[in-house]
Length: 285
Length: 141
Image (cartoon, rainbow over all chains, first blue to last red; front, side, top):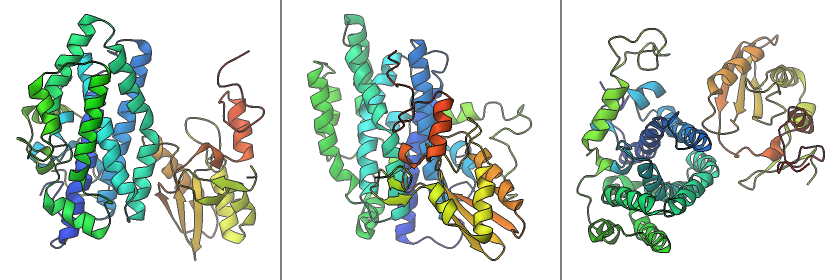
């Protein structure tokens, strides 16, 4: 039994859809938050180090918000530690955009520039929906997100100040853009029942074109050249992604991330979140 | 809007200040509010009631249910606050079981802090908006 197996009877179509969608939101925040914690102590300036730690904490907090909603509704098995730490890559529903390792500081800026605006649109779809509990959670997250977008805007502008910084940001964007095609690519079996039920005020797929146009405007405003191939990812608003994290298709980077979390399993002792005894007495997967 | 009576949350919902809720409560419910007022935020010596994060107290026989929120969702002190609140409630005579639920609606904001909380936070150097005595957040002399 894995942490994402459903606990009771067969879930309804709507329950199964909600589970997949909320895992998408939660796993996005967890993967990005986890990657950002790698910068703690390594940020380019002291202020920036603090900022990235703060954003990482926000993202991990938002992951908790959604994992908790899943657990409260009995849509998943396991506690918060299991959901965040003890799930195999194929069980995760995050976009491939946020799972990769950050080789360069420009990767943080590029991924942030592309991700936070997409996240805002998905959260607004829930905040404007009919499920009061989920809408409240979305509003809480939305309240905390504006400075993440300001941070991405500020640094993307700053990284155009020198040729060296500009070329590194352009390379990071060119690498990240093809991985954005799954951001809104929740399959019909997930999107349709949630739109039908009113939980989502809008079909995620319908948000993609507007998001892509905004990204294009931002790249244009900063005169960033990312190459036609990368730009193609913004054009193909209706095309199915080559690899769709929303259905569990991930890059090796996510396996590395999960392996890293469990690298010390044999030597970990005591109250470590990977092995801490579960409150309900259940077994860790 | 009056600072004592309450305000409007970010979501536009009207709510009374925790102090007003405490004053209006009677019996066991009153004693639970008073017990919660002794619980401090682990990061600052200010009561969770005065921070405005306690939203509701419900008493059903000897069972007590409390709704509280966090000042931000990544709050690392969450489990401590919940455990401290439950322990404080169980100290109240006539209470058998305490269940503290973390809720996210309405969204917490500065205007949920009680006048007492504002004063205390300002004494600790936090520039809480809406208080004449607050330090200038722009740090002008």
